[in-house]
Figure 1 (cartoon, rainbow, N blue to C red):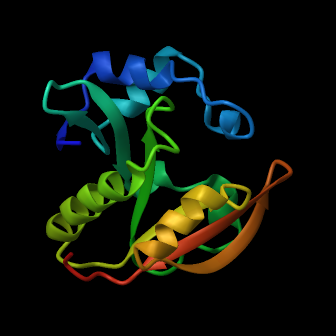
Figure 2 (figure 1 turned 45 degrees about the vertical axis):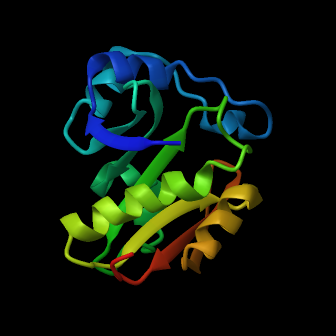
Length: 160
């Protein structure tokens, strides 16, 4: 799969917000609202596209990648690049995750000069956790938010 990072557009934002994941991943489903579109177009989101510019995923950095309950539980104190990401549900579980994540990590490591990268994942998402561990992320903190347990994972900044 040939993948590229592109500017988030309104078309990509609407498409991503309409994705529907199957249980138990339906936790990641979004609602298409004007404020959700504005969030995705706010500058911290990027589209991941194939060679035909078809949307295969997205990622964000900074505050948009954090869960508010994590802030209240002081899990984001260390200075890191916070990363949030999502892949088109028709592509998940088919072996594309490693290439997808590596492309994002390469971009972030170049953009942020090797600064440590942190992400937050729901603890039930074993598939994602395995992928992150395979890519040298280490579990750090756990916290609860709306009856859901989350884990922060960190990767020291090393150019891939």
